[in-house]
Structures are given as C-alpha cells and as structure tokens.
Length: 448
Image (cartoon, rainbow, N blue to C red; front, side, top):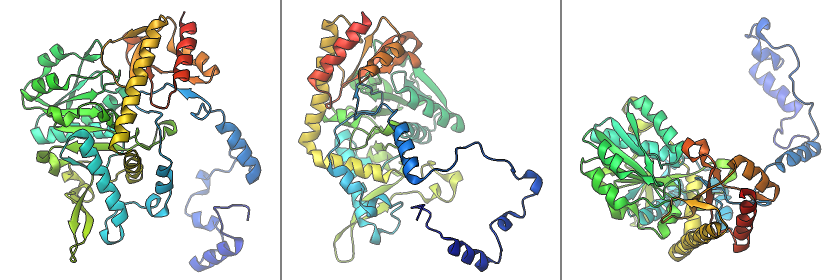
C-alpha cells in the first residue's frame, strides 16, 4: 500500500459514500458556491514516492544544528542534560503516551500514580507542601502563580524582577492584561534584583513579588533578604526555580516562599528545539485549594488497598469558565512522567551529584575565561550559567563558533540593550573538560 497512514481503499470510499447517500466526495461540498471555490493549482511541489520524500526530509533535517553533531553551551531556559535511557523506554509504552485525562481512576492507576510521584518529588525538591500534576511550561506556571496571588490577596499589582526569564515576563504581561493587573518590573543591579528599588516599590497594593532562583543570568538571588521585604506588606513570595539547581541550593520553601514554580525540562525532557516542556507548581498548604490544574491524591479502596484519584480540582475549569480559578484544563502528563522517571533513576544522590557537576564545571569554565582574558561580569555565586563580555557582536561570534561545531551562548543584547555584546554561557554536566577548554580557546581567539 502506498500510504502507510491512509489505508482507505477505493472500495472503502465507495461503500462510505453509498452509506450516506451521495455519489462523490465533491457532492459533500455542494453547499459551497462555485464562485468562491479555488479552481487553480496550489503552488506546492508534485507528490513524491515515500522513499524520495524521506530522503528529501532527511536532507532538510540535517541542516539543523543538533546536539548530536555539535557541542552546546546554549542555555537560557532550555538545557542539554543527561537523560537516563530508561526514560524513553517508559514513556514509549502505549498506556502512557496515548493517555489523556485520568478521569476514571479504576482504569488509570498507573497514570495517576506516576503523576502522584511527580508531585511528591517536586515537593521534596522545592520544600513546599503541595504540588500539582504539572503545567504547560515554566512560563505559564509563572503567570498562573501571579493570577493566583491576585485572586488570593484581592490586589492588582504584580512586581517581577528584571532578572526573571524575558519570555516568562512577556507571558505574565499577556495574562495580566486580561485580568486588568499592573505588572511592575524591578531593575537589575550587578546581575541581581535591586533590593533598594524593590523596597521603594513594595507596598500594601502588591499581590506578589516574583523572582527567579537561579536567575536568568545564573546568579543566586538572596531569598532571605527578599522574603523580609516582600512579606512586610503581606504580599505573596513567588520563586521561579530550576529544579535541578535545588539538588545543591537551599529550597525556596526554606526561605518562606509561598509559591514555587518552574520548568521540569532539566529532568528527562530533551531540548527538542524548544518544546514541549512541563511546568511545575508548588504551594504552601494554605493555598492548595487555589492551585490551578490537577492534583492527584492517595487514598484506599473498599478492600483497604492503596489507590490514587484526582482531587481538589475545581470543575468550573471545565464547565463554568466565568467562575474558573484558571484557564488550565490540561497538563503535561507525559512530560511529567518523563521527569518522574528521570528523577527516580537518578535518585537523591544522583540529583545532588548532577547538580554539583553543573556547579563545578561552570565554575571551571568561568575561571578559564578569566585566565584567557575574557571578562566575566556579575561576579558572585552562580549555578550553571554566567555572563561574559565580548569585543564583537554575539551573533558574529556564534556564527564562527558554529563552523567549528560549537553552539555558543545566548545573546543577552536581544532582551537587555545595555548588555549588547554580552553572552550567557551555560555549562551542564554533559560538557567535558576538553569541550570547555576548546570553547575558551576558540572564543578567546575570536574575542581578541
């Protein structure tokens, strides 16, 4: 058969047309006036055989700078991390990758348990009481945290640090526009949230203050000092955090965070040209009934056996949308499963070791750049990213690096005009000493 995924034969088509009482497919569209029907030829290539088509598509795909043939130092929210082989084996099982919503617990125990484990591990990492069964991605999780804060406090102002991911800030502004909320950005000073500026902006009209930990520049925000400023006016303290970093950093929950959100991409989710991802959302007990999306709870059946069910979910999210606490009706269960499998395979010790490797290797790279004459800006503690200053445009440098099989860092001038010619470098546990040394040498030569 020519078309593997279109198995309908001419006999099938004829039988279906006879069943519904029409003589041709064109007759199905007889209600459309002839004058509005397109009569010409589409400007597309003629159909090819499957073999020829696959060759052409493969040739096009090889033009992408993938991570199999290139060494990547690009981060900025999407990272090249180790993925245990077992992740793909588990999520490729049909009962998982075809599942959607586990409304019927009697036939969805595997899916529900996987989500429950995801929630449990997110709570352990973040130091929070309750986590939901995932969000679309880190950006929408952040925006939903702001909406929850506004609804809970009945206030209309959201303060967000300028050191929060630029794309997440844009998503926040989009959400806020529909809810008539004011979004105020706190400036950045030396790569961190400006505490003095925050003190001047924080007041009793602010629903929440949102910071990132580590922030977009890789710096470690002083959560203790931030918490004191934020809670002084009874605003909610929202922290967006890279979950892998929490393998070595003190969890935001220990600093009094009210909501901790982020993207689970570092655990078992490939870069895949930017998506799909899996956002996580964790809160204190007092906010658990206002969490968007789904929560899975553990219970027992009539025989006393352990079981899992969806719980604390507002049906208004599906039916009476005008009363909904959120527009999130779905989740990223398959990616949440991937993250769960990855975290389980790594274990507590493995997560800590993986996070430590990110910390140590990025510190090694930072030191090597300094020794090679490249300026490292924003001195101070960082996780797996840091900023360097170049004498040429980042675009020019990256084009030349790519010719040598290296995917360079992120051009910060795209989002921060004052940081033109500044590059955000990401060094994960995947990078070897030789690869780091090669980047430092090549970039140093180009920078000179």
